[in-house]
Image 1 (cartoon, rainbow, N blue to C red):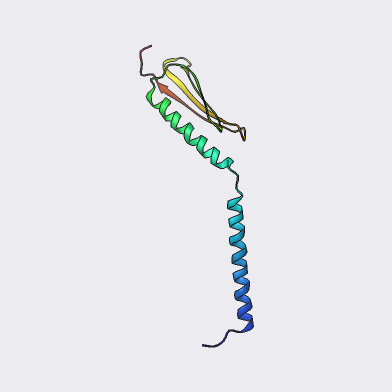
Image 2: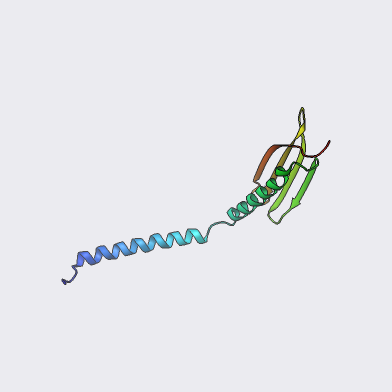
Amino acid sequence: MKASTLVETLVASVIFLVMFAISLETIVRLAVRRDDDTVYVVAEGETARLFREYASAGERLPGTTVKEYDWGTITIAIGPCRDYPRLQVVDVSATLRSERKVISRRQVVEINYEL
C-alpha cells in the first residue's frame, strides 16, 4: 500500500468536517423544536376520536358539550339540519390555548332515534 498524499488527507479531513457540521446542525434543530407541534397532534387525535364517536352513531340528542383539556377545549355541537328533520349536523371543534388555532370537523348525519 502506498502512503496517502497530503492532498488526499486534506480532502478527507474537509469531508469529515462537513459531515460533522451537517449532523451537528441537524441534532440542534431537532432538539430545539417547539412543543406546540406535539400539542397540535394530540388535539387533532382527540378531535378525530370524539368526531368518530359522536358522528358515527347518529343517536345523540341536539345540544352542546364542552370538554376541557390542558392544551385547550373541544366543543361538540349537535343541531338540526335546516329543512331536513331526519338529519342533524355534528360539529366538533378544538381550540388550542397556546397558538389560538382551531381544528374543526363537521358532518351531516342521519338521526337514528324517534323524534
